[in-house]
Length: 365
Image (tube, rainbow, N blue to C red; front, side, top):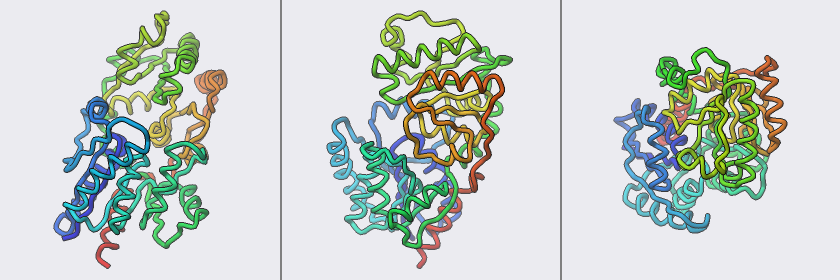
């Protein structure tokens, strides 16, 4: 029997690995599929609590990366991953994501001569000194099999000289999970709970430190959303720390009555909000993917994005760090000036099956 270990270093990547695990059931007599999850232990418990409505498969291993520099986290993760790989001796490892922990898993497996596949291969923001971008480039160099979800990723791999004949266009496994929980999203009563059943509303959520942990960044977000709330309701979903300490972080600023704060929501409730919002304002990559699949208007407050397909094909628009431009564009969308978009090729809920079928075929040779 062959053995595959899939690795995820965030709850969002665990959603993709969950889709892969479901697809591996087809080959359960031929392949043993194990899951390794990594993260900051205390924060991961809080993060996963927002996915209480999702039935994750069993995680066979958990690696706590701890706090520290990028080098310290990578080294610590490599030491833990090495123990797992020595014990399990897998025939292949499948990576999702591009955190330090994912790179550490890839480096360790590569040095042990274990074949590596990556289901987020080829994505690039071209932000040269960004740690995530460095991890994306280095992880791809280590891989034997590439699974890409958009044509820009395929081009990036070829431009980097990584076309080894194993670049596979398979779609986006995150979409598989959305499809699986589509009826739960439609049946969500989150709009009723927030008392916005008949209202036009904007959904906002930010996670990047420059927009939340820095005083000027937080103030810029707060002021923009406060002004927007004069035109319609705004639902601002905050991470736990910012939600629980909002008064302190905001300097005691008065909250407009049409600006509604929310702590992290269950995944299907958050999807329901995206699906019903006039526009979504975010700095988070997974939301760019989800909003494109839901055909929801999305404004991304970042200088760069690796999800080029959401700009070229989908409903996403890149705002840079320009909050005035973001506010102006949001008002235009509210008034009907929407960006046309369509669902990207092969984002059809079958990506994990394609990935697993290819891996199974390769392991038989």
